[in-house]
Length: 500
Image (cartoon, rainbow, N blue to C red; front, side, top):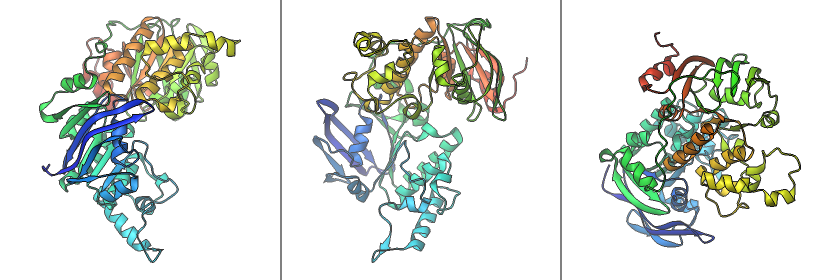
């Protein structure tokens, strides 16, 4: 890391329809540095990125790039300065080749003719630099997720980026794939490029970052050298003491195997995919499912919700339960919060009100009854959903509030069984606390709750019992009280059952 300042933002203000998204933010980043940007959903991180990348212009304040005052009015100006963004939703064109995507909108040409050979040569060099083992002639649709990430980074290198912004790169990567991206980041910073890294995962921030800037309520509240700062200190600054205590570990000391309470799985079978047997998801408890990618966690929940075809030998409160569609599951008061909330759980173009009542299945629910129906408001207040009014579109909410709305519709429907698939993915520390505090209350009120997560500490903290899935089967069962990470990690990674 050098001391040469690449970007300095001073007193940045941005308002939207009377709402202040950024309130006098100061921010700077040096060449060769990984600066992490931390804050809750809605703290202003996305707005700051969009100002730097030319999608928004600030209402007040000044931006300096390499010591010179600049006005970044468009994404093209940002690119010309040397600012490139790797978005969480990778903005690649799937039907074009890797090389075509690398030069999209700025194809090297002479007298109007594309110099294809030169484009391929530059593309090959950029892909090699990021450690990619794929051809620039490959269509993006044929790439893996990590290859797409590397393509985005390679695209930044082809413009000789001086500032690379990485927005939640780990959200869709496995641990090994993320380490590959980290290795590329290390090479990029050694060459003098600055990286602005946005993530909610504090463990990876501590691993890759040099410094961290914390935003809270649209203001910059602190800059920290990560080597000298604990995760507890970062969490305190991110949430500012305005939340309640983080939900403490569940106090269960014994497994519940009552087949008349909640869901009991004798068998859920999809040939070649999963064969799950003897699993209890009882009322009043939070049951966790953990395993490596492809272990079958999401598939199991989808099968229980009727959105995945499967052989189901399952009972719900002692009665046969075999939903062949989500509608049939909802009729039995079973709700699913899917892993991908934007495409599967939330209607981003519909109002918050519509999203919250869509699963409400009582007859005679017409316009007159809607006006007097108080359950959505009560639920929104209980979950702490932050919005202007119920007519606001779901897509206009922050990620944490979107997830709360997805959960809210099942509370409005008074669901007795909640299936939560990676419910905190992409959420900040404060939103995770709020969400799980509510999940604890839901379980304590008598609902049966199943949670999948790729984060072991989260499962150990919030679940009463844990099933380890490996290659589509249950390999081990744990009661979390007194459980150590070592007890479970061996089974998760190897699939080998612990010694009796």
